[in-house]
Structures are given as C-alpha cells and as structure tokens.
Length: 179
Image 1 (cartoon, rainbow, N blue to C red):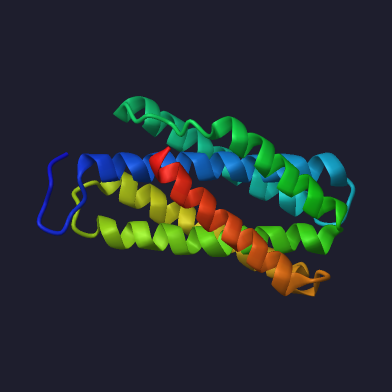
Image 2: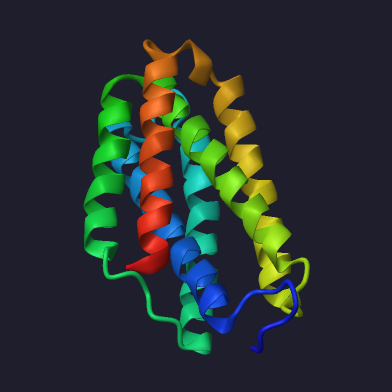
C-alpha cells in the first residue's frame, strides 16, 4: 500500500490490524474470565455468551487478516491473555453489574478507537478493512448499550471502575500499536 496525501502508510495500516487483533483477543479473554466466575446460569450470562461469540468472530477475522497481509501480531499477546482474563474474572467476582461496567468501559474506548481508525481510513483505498472496522464498531456499540441496559452504571464505584478500565484500555491500545 502506498502513501497518499492524507493517507496512512503500509506500516500504519499494519499497526491498525495488529492493535485490533490484540484488542479482540483481550476482549475474548475478558468474557472467558467473566464466564468462568459467573457460570452459565448467572444474571447476564446469556448476554455475555452472545458478546463473547461476536468477539470471537472479530478475533477470527483479524487473525485471518494478520495472516493474509503478513502483519506481525503484538508480542504482548501472552500479557493480554492474562490481563484480559484477570479483568473479566475480577469484575465478575464483584457482581453482574460490575461485569457489565467492565463491558461498558471497554466498549467506550473501542468505539473511540475504531472511530479514529475509520477517520484515518477515509483517504485510503482499503474497503475491506474499512468495512470490517465499521461493522465491528456497530457490534461493540451494541455491547455497550446492552451493558448499560443491564445495570453497568449501577455497579458499586462505577465512575472509578470505569475510569480505571478505560485508562487501561488506552494504555493497551497505545502499546499494542507498537509492540
């Protein structure tokens, strides 16, 4: 892919794919951790299963894109596996509303991140990546809306919990773009 006037370099596009794959991997781990603690019969388990299935589809798509485009995945994947699972398990242990608060916080940052990527891709001729990001962004927004409808904002300490998770997401995004 060549540079364009306002566009991204091939390295920038690779960075987008790398960070998106890492993020979807982390999200899949969060839901695994939540379901391991909550089980299948807890409040919100069916919603979490549905979101987890979508995140797995997102991950599979970016895994395929990494392979097809020869993009180096993040070297931090083992850390994101542990961190994502721990975040999911911890918030689930705090209760169903805290698990939903985690989802709302993560999806708030993913929405912002994906919108930034879509803005950057406006000058690019990469319809596949643009379409995938736009589609996945809509599903992530659905996850956020579901989480809020299921009491995310009623979780104990919601403002602090949400702020901490969002900060962690921004840190993970920044790091995964490069490493």
